[in-house]
Image 1 (cartoon, rainbow, N blue to C red):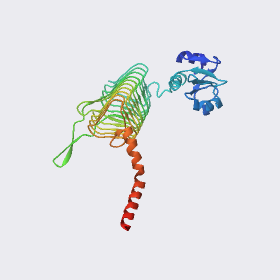
Image 2: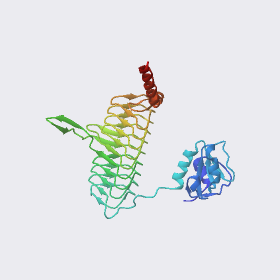
Image 3: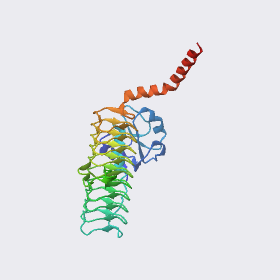
Image 4: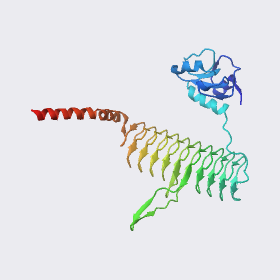
Amino acid sequence: MSRTAEELAKFLNCAIEGDCAVRLTGVAAPGRARPTDLIYVDNARNLERAARSQAKCAVIAPGLELAQKTLLRAENPKLAFARAASWLVPQAAISTGIHPTAVISPTAKLAHGVGVGPYAVIEDHVEIGEKTQIGPFCFMGRGSRLGAQCRLHPHVTLYAGTLLGSRVIVHSGAVLGSDGFGYVAGDGKHWKFPQVGEIEIKDDVEIGANTTIDRGSLERTEIAAGVKLDNLVHIAHNVHVGEHTVIAAQSGISGSAVIGKSVALGGQAGLGERCEIEDGAIVGGQAGILPGKTIRSGEIVWGTPARPLRKFKEQFGWLGRLPRMAEQLRELHEAAAKK
């Protein structure tokens, strides 16, 4: 797709400086950009790199100058660049039409424009909304419901009854609606606790590759609108994740944990069962939240067990001093022994 800089400025509602007729066909980093690619500059440190770029057009922050290029002025250049990318470079189709090798139950309901790839399986009473794309080898368990314009990459598994809103993106290998890890000890063995609850993924959620989300045991596991999950995230039964929260790779969320809105979890964070992370909190990478604990709204925590960032940095600083302190203590003992 080709657009002029002027068309893009109108789409982004940006002021434009320079040649309005410059044609744009893609986006790229400054060092890899072609003349028809768009780049962005959000701070003065990147000006020199952008100046050397072959790109003829840049989204740039107010107050920065870049000679011999067409400039689109934006308060948040990175956001404007992301919006421009979605317009200039539409995503390639995962599937179009119904592949002859797909196995589709006669009781399934597929809306207009649904695409189903090779060897996908769609069981009884599944409902799929308009223009949703199901990749090769996906499995849609009986009674699952998917909204409009979802994108399921190859090898995604939806267990029976899984509910997806509209515009949900699920990457390869993700498993949604599997049984939670629930057992009751008795008579010398572990008895499986019922895993008969629901799982619901709301609108505009993106789920990374090989992420797993368990269904509720007797209740519901719920991922609210706009949540973004990285690869290899595990979310256990009965968990609630609030709107626009982001969770980085290899994080694990134990059963019945509650995560508020606009929370950020760093990579490999671990949450114990029934803990609560309130709105806007930040949990650092590899931090561990003990079962039943609450992280208050807006708080930043790090370490295991997790503690306020200021306290963590202070304690970590002292930890680095321990070898020297041990050496000083040894020297004192040796000096005292000689007296």
